Length: 264
Image (cartoon, rainbow, N blue to C red; front, top):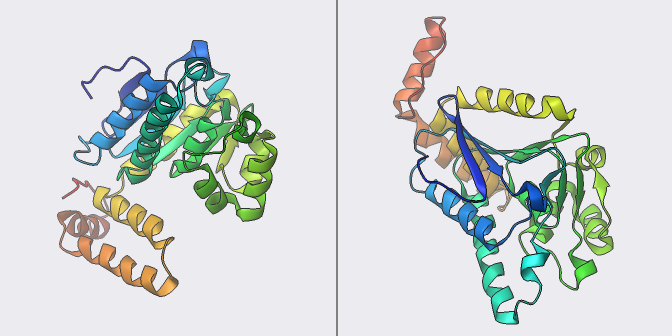
């Protein structure tokens, strides 16, 4: 990752893990146009070349906020055309998260409001610190979630719960996010990143093609009927039969050693 960003910290952690940090702590890591464009650029690049990255961890700078949503100070005074242009870019950014072929894990280290909550829901899964809070407050501002919130939140926690959260605009805790299915684990702030990285390491040591195909099979299969999903699963499965990693996995098992997967 040689590209320098103004609003993101991008750091290779070990050989195959990339940690991406939303880095506007003075603004509670709120998304301005620059951050949206940089996130879009970064994650669209991964659709073309993983550059050896097998897992991405997304977090926020500091210990108070993951992302406070859209930067309302920047948006103050925008014309309708400027607002729509910016939002079109945010929509493309979220689609880049969802389409990213690399597993994407959140380490939600504080407040995740508005777009921050929508990003959380767009990730493959996420862990949260026990001080994290979540909300989709858009209806209190005369708009509605428009970066996947009305689609990804119901898929994570069910339609009725998502309607309550979105229509009231009320915040909820990390523990509630866990109980309702948005978050996989709740951890003390000082344990959050290491626990997330431990999971990232576990994923990174597995066969990259297998992980990619499994991720795709789950995500796309969820949009299909069960019969179509089962058929699609086998298409994804068959892609791995001729790979060197499949042969290496069987060899390593029989030779009683850890496999060395190369993603081929």
